Image 1 (cartoon, chains in turn blue, orange):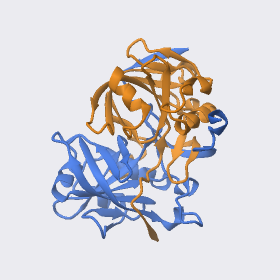
Image 2: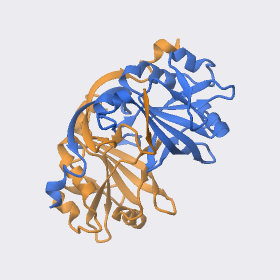
Image 3: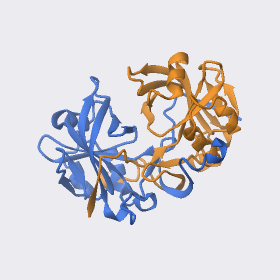
Image 4: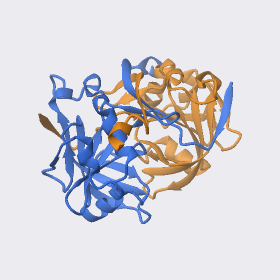
Length: 187
Length: 187
């Protein structure tokens, strides 16, 4: 039986993405975003309300990094969503995490997160709500790579966000393989 | 240690979303999409190459439904990504799944998927690559709702896509709570 839930932003899974930018004084800002992700082979879309410190930083520096938050840093990832860089000047410092400047774009890489996309701002819509970034490079911690140098989901231990009830989850077992699981029906 | 992986569309988690539309003859088409999702409180974005049958259907009917594929239907979900509606006329029929017409939009609801967004097309970019849909209603199977009528992730059993290696995964344990896990750092 089906039940109507009304107009809700309800999909699953949602990511736990960390947008890192530089403030005007060169300090680091990080925010937590679920509404965005891959939108092309070399692009990501961020959907952000204009009031975020991140939007001002994106306009000024035209660059950001986008990292996948992992289970080991759930406290920091959630904190980056709880507190605004507009109100807390030492927001990043208080997290206890560390940043280095990207060699490719004018944005910080948070060392503790296992996977980071280095991005240039490609387009900012007039209302600031949608920002498209061009991926210049993906950087992974070697601890999440398998023997072939590819990212292994079970090593990545990325957080998964539950938009229905605000839960953070880890990933479970593998249940299939793309372009293979459906082959019996494609005959 | 960090390793550069180059320009890749690498984020995690990625969704396994089923876009359902009507063909010109009233038969059902379903495609599998990972590059898209929530982009506003009442909107979803689909990033699609123009060659898909879905894009022609979206332009003609200005409506679609977007469903979350679950573990029980991994074979069908993958099949919808393997085969094109441009080539296989009875694509949906072969899946063995069932559809009913949405009461709200001119698009089919696939009965077997546990969570479905009924959407009107709000905007199609000129190249057809980005389609924005307005969510008119969310419909959930009562089997995935808890006693309070809210979607429960552990009941939903949604598929999670691994863009790195093409794996399908199920969700694991809960590891935190948004706006709570980070509170110790926000003090």
